[in-house]
Amino acid sequence: MNSTIVLHQVSKSFGNKNVLNDISISVGSGQIFGLIGPSGSGKTTLVKIIVGMDLPSSGQVHVLNTPVPNLNLLQKIGYMAQADALYNDLSGLENLTFFASLYKLNKDVQKKRIAYAANLVNLTPHLTKKVQNYSGGMKRRLSLAVALIHDPQILILDEPTVGIDPELRKSIWAEITRLKKEGKTILITTHVMDEAEKCDQLAMVREGEIISSGSPFELKDHYQIHSLEEVFLKAGGDKDENNRIS
Ligand code: ADP
Ligand code: MG
Image (cartoon, rainbow, N blue to C red):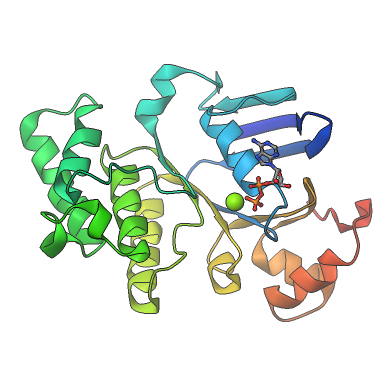
């Protein structure tokens, strides 16, 4: 299987604070890859480095065999940041139109993509409202729509379902699974265990290190337990090399 995202010995420090330590991962194309770990473990920092918004202190990042950062890659990546990056003074529709205009889409395609993305996240009836009047969950949904607007080959979603009700969460996951079937590669961060269960591969991050990785089945098998919740607790207590199962 081809690797779409490859990190080789990536470390990152802010000042003298070491936030990521020697991270190597490889995300196969067409996979849903989950980064799971507690708050503050380094997931967002890692994701920003993959997108090219931040540079590693050492190590290499390649996306689609291209060294990051690279402007052309942005056309191929849909990124949903943990903090919503939206224009509050504009309506939902104006936000979607603005972001769509950043990509080389013709007007017809643009219209179709906006309708598709808004519908996917149940925002069609709210498109004319200003974003400043949206709830937190609506902003998350609009951010997801923005990430999908140019039909990217790779989706990078940083805690996409925070603040989203269970029903919509289900439909978002159905869509993520459908996108995977289309051959897209999806990297997602989460600390919701039932979401981790839906990933093909997982990497558990703790204090800036990958302490364990593998499929949900492999992780449970390795720790001889039944739920990922337990994996999380077990792995959390022990940070040695023996936890590396793949
Ligand atoms: P997570 O997404 O897993 O919650 P983050 O990547 O946001 O973790 O943060 C990891 C650590 O890096 C935290 O201790 C956070 O305070 C620190 N950190 C993140 N960004 C910066 C920054 N720009 N400057 C200094 N410290 C940072
Ligand atoms: Mg984060």
